[in-house]
Image 1 (cartoon, rainbow, N blue to C red):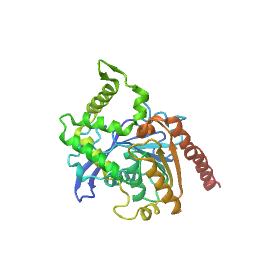
Image 2 (cartoon, helix red, strand yellow):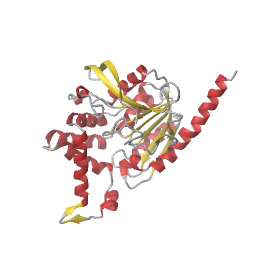
Image 3 (cartoon, rainbow, N blue to C red):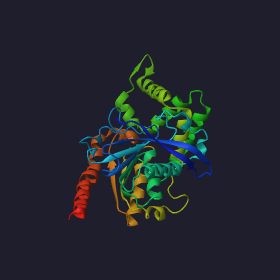
Image 4 (tube, one colour):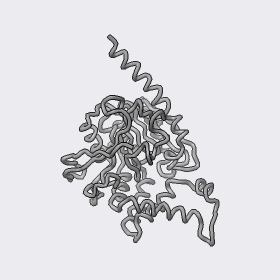
Length: 336
C-alpha cells in the first residue's frame, strides 16, 4: 500500500463565500510515477477513503497489478475528502459542514491535480457520493477527462436522496448515539429487503435477530473509525450534488467532452436505476457520447462494492481496448 501523501493548499474558496486557510489535501497514488502513464482518478464514497488497492483496498478486486484497472499501465490517484478521518489530520475536520458542497470538493480535487502536474485524465471514476463529485469535476473542467464513469449515482441529488439525507442529519444532530444510529438507517438504503432475507432468513437466538446484531456491528464499526463532523460533512456533500447550479442539465452536460459511461444497479434504493436511465436517454438525445450498463444484484446500492466480476466486465472495454488504442495512437505520434 502506498503512503498517504499530503498537499498543502493555501486556501480553499467555498461556494458559500467563506474561505478555509491552509487546507491539507491527502491522497494515494498507485502504479507508475505520476506523469509516466495515463492517469485515472477514483473518488471514494461516503464512508470510503483513498486506499483503493493493496492491503485493505476497498476496490482491491478491480485495481492492481494485472487486474481490470492494471496498475502496471495506469497511474491511479485517489484523494481523501478533507475531514473524512483517514488522513489523521485533526485540523482537517470541518465543523461548519453546511458551508461545503460537492462542487467545492470537486474544485479542491482539481486544485490538487494541478499541483501534482496532472493535465488530462484517462478516466474519472466514482461510486455513490464519489460519482457525484466526479460529475462535478467533469462539469468544471469539461475537456480534461477522456472517460467519465459515474457508478450508482447521478448528476443530482433527487428528492428521494435529499429526503434521506435529512433523516440522516436529524439522527446525527439529535441521537445520543449519532454515528451508530445513522449508520443503521443508512444500511437499509445501501442494501435491499431481498439481500437481508437471503443473508439472515429471520435467524435469531433468544429473540435477538441476526439482522439486529449485524446492524449494531456496522454501527459500532463506523463509530470506531469515523467522527461526527466527518459524517455530517459527507451527508451534506451527498445532499448538494447538482452539476447544473440551478441551470439546465443538458446545457451543462453537453459541454463535457468525455465519453460518459453510466453504470446503475438494478436494485439500488438510493440512486435508483430509473433515474440513471432518464439521464442516459437525455444525453443520448442530445448527441453526447454515452453508454448505459446495469449491475444486476440482490444487494442494492452496495453492489458496486460487491459485484466485482460484473463491474470488471463493464470496465473491460474502457480500460483494455482503449489502453491499446491509446498506445497505438501514441506510437504513431512519435514515429520518426
